[in-house]
Amino acid sequence: LFSRAWEIVVRYVAAGLFTGVFWGLYLLSGAILELVGIEILSDFLEIDPVPLVLTGGVLGLGLAVVFELRHLISPKIVLRLLRLLLPPLAVVSIIFALVAPVRGLSDLLGSLSAGATVMAMAIALITLVTVTLDRNDDEAARAKALTLSAKAGAVLALLLAALSLWAITLRVGQYGWTPNRVLAATTGVVLLGYGLFYTAALLRPAWQAAIRRANVVMALATLAIAALWLTPVLNAERLSAHSQLARFEAGKLDAEALDLWRISEDWGKPGQRALTPYRAADHPMHDALADRIAALDAGKLDPYQPAQTVPTLDEVGGLLKTVLAIRPEGRDANALINRLPDYQIRQIQSDCAAFTTPSGAPACVGVVADFHGTPEDELLVVHWNGSALRVTSTHGAYIDGPNEMSTETAGPDVIDAILNGDFDLVPARGLELKVGDVHAAPMHARE
Image (cartoon, rainbow, N blue to C red; front, side, top):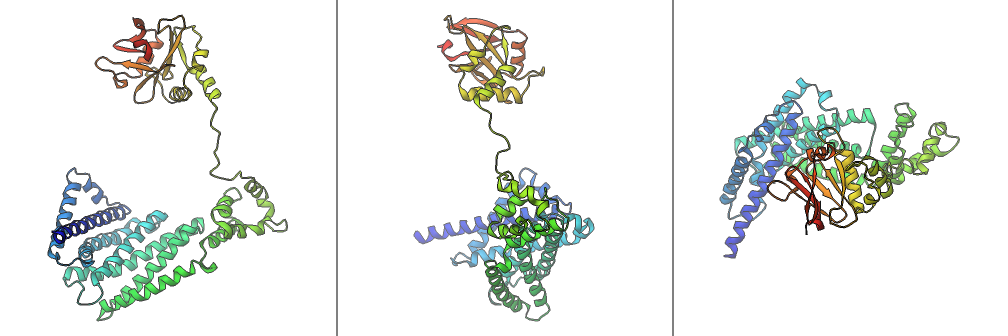
């Protein structure tokens, strides 16, 4: 029983992972085709049953393959499933490669996000080619569609890696180096290496074995590049800081556009060391940056510093008193406003400032009356928050619509009616505000 239960769990987990990978690659394919103006994949998903049907179909396919390999509780299950994704991914990449030149590569790949999408597709192709060829000829896929897709994927990986590097080069030419661009360029170089090795391997009779050897070489090369990231040779912050400062000296950036905060703070000690020479009075560019450096040292360039302070409760209350219309007219409600809960004062002022009634008035109004049958008046504020009518008083409030107690049964037109005097104060246990079929009162006035 335990063995059978475990087999069932593995089958569903493997099929579920396959389904998740399918959707990831589907969305990636849709994104890369949209770069060339083809939206067929995204439009296809907007047909109501399609996402569910595709999910069910792919999950069923995954379960079928897992059932065929039910005696293999090993990574082979996942690898065999992933092979099935290479042909459709190769087709999508071919379409992109054919249409991209027609659209114009400079416009298409002018942003780093577009380059990242192309790079992600190259990574997917390299991964699936490796999975298809497996560790030796005995384990490799034998189906003609898979071997042809592997050959196509090898060439397409080179093409997409080159395009992604070009996109990064365009971005660096426009805005200089940043750590993210250094990372993207490094990744692009690694992918280009894979693509070159894979394409060269296709020229050999034993091309599958050549690609496997290339994977070993590129794995060692990737480790070496990763090690260089821990040295000054490939320190992304140092390269980026010097790049931005060089652009400033070359006149490509003015002093205001040079992001000294990011150089000095986000890019750590390498950025601070790069900026140090400009602090010296004898540096040729010192005078041009002196004011900006002083502002940096004073913390005025900190992008995380709030642009404005939060107004105090007294300031908010003062604003509310200037915009809150009071009915009946002539009644003084300033002292009553001060008795409202603090958070309600802020909420009412926010609603008054953000929303209006159908007639264009601020979406709030106050009614002063002896709602609870004592000589002391009370303020009832009706305000609209964009989706529902709210009623506030110092003791809480309720609102009734025609059929049920709900703030959803009335709209901002109620505020216009009160402003126009179209309301009554009717006796309950105290008084209720009546506007058409809507009744409102402080909570204790109804108890």
